[in-house]
Image: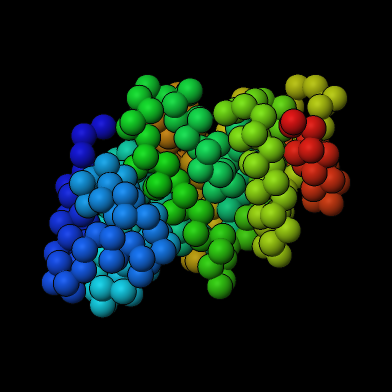
Length: 266
């Protein structure tokens, strides 16, 4: 993946604001409580800025939200063009119903888990995954909003057992899943290991409920995702969702299973 223009803009504005404030990289690093090497890496476009880094830098450098706005645009730019429409739908939704038979949904992934997926399951080289990983993590901020959407995820039991990134990554990921799963508007449901064939095995999908209007769905596939708006197709997916949900455990049972699985990854 080539260097993104907005990443270069962020780096240039960070450098300009820092020098205008009369601060060296070391002085800025002390004020924002990050290493000078990280400040240098961001200014040289070798590392994308994380949200907390951006917030602290924007505040210390009196940028009045400029760095935050550039980062938001940069994240949108790093998302694949065919996925941008869905990200907008996702950000505005009042409810999201997600089914994933193979891996955890992007909204629930840790940085290490997401990175392992990009490196192992995509055609990107390891040095090319920083920006799409950052984009995925930023999408997750909707679940921490003051008024988050209702998020209901049905997961196949195999997602707890597939060693994405290795034992340490899986242990961290499942502990994170427990933490997110205890939020009031997040509900997790596992399809047990002993369930045979069921409708969801045909593939992952998400159904979004917008603030007004009809539900919209998203189908994932190996080439690119597809936004589904035709209501006859959305109704079919809702029926699949109800069938899948009927096979799954309760939220409480699911959290207990995730807790046990997390401690089994040693």
